[in-house]
Length: 352
Image 1 (cartoon, helix red, strand yellow):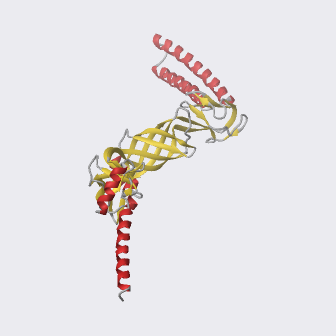
Image 2 (tube, rainbow, N blue to C red):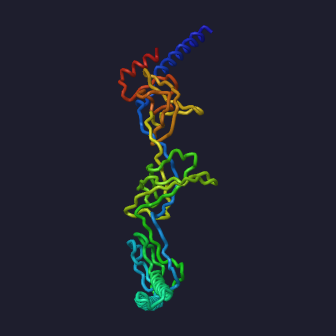
Image 3 (cartoon, rainbow, N blue to C red):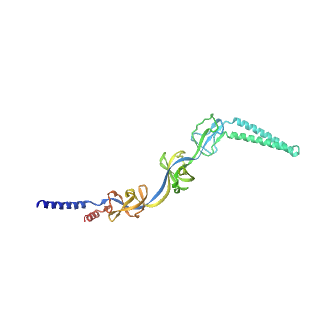
């Protein structure tokens, strides 16, 4: 027993010394930190919209007739008033010639009766009757001209023509599509948003749109119209934006993802890695006097790798941005720029 007791005491002493050495050997955690700065945060609305032409019309045959000529090429440009197609009008031209001849004869007879009436050799009744005949003859001529005009199809506005599906010589019935003319110098983009987000949009507001055909090219435009009526079934409101389309990259019928820049504001921010969660609470580690102080913060939106800070810290305070998983409240920390002497002194204070 006299031999065992001294050995036991020596072992306890060595164990205590080893623990102190182990405690001294643990340096402060190496972390990265940066001061809290202010950044611009944006409230955005995301939606999906459909592209429509600025103006678009399907030109159809007004009557059942044979096509004598087509004056456009597939996908070609046509000006306002340009003749697109001409239908046969031989019978109508003959009727116009006959009507013009009748109108001329009726007018000549009217002139003679007016002359006789002036000299008292014609009654007022005969004059009135001839006036009616002359007017009827002129109306018949105008009707024949209108019938001929119906057989000439013109572009109502400038634009690009669709692919041709009919050929000269074909007999088309009334209503048969001949060509589609689209003005795509600018695009109408229609999309819907929930009525709960209606306060975030206004006319003239900027938007960005991206098409699957051009994923790396955002198209910018402005909101032109907000539908005054909300759909009672979906509780959504329809928005129409206008996108310039000078190179015709956007086509009617395209599906585009829309981003509406609703509001912008300046707020404090920290990197996402600096924020740790504990249930519903969020915390950051503020570096003060060489130690990490766990501080509760109120957070807002996340954007571009940053978290909006609404309260809990002040601008200019230094927070740990990398290495938070190694920290607890009040633990000493060291930064990459700390001098070796400072680290040794910190270790000495920790050992003391």
